[in-house]
Image (tube, rainbow, N blue to C red; front, side, top):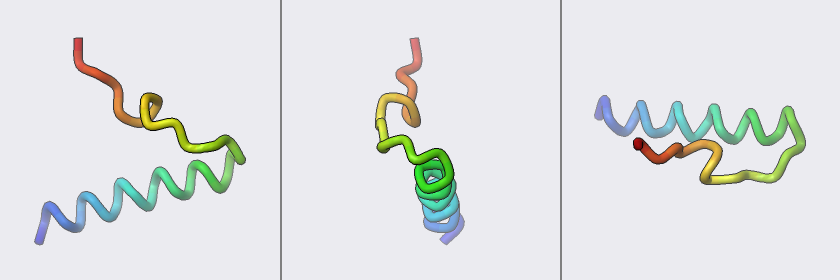
Length: 35
């Protein structure tokens, strides 16, 4: 249940950022690849 809550929170943050900025969602920007 904790994991589900964390995933929902992250999704809400991404959705809020897209709505506030008006920039289309870019998965590479929100999910950086660890080098």
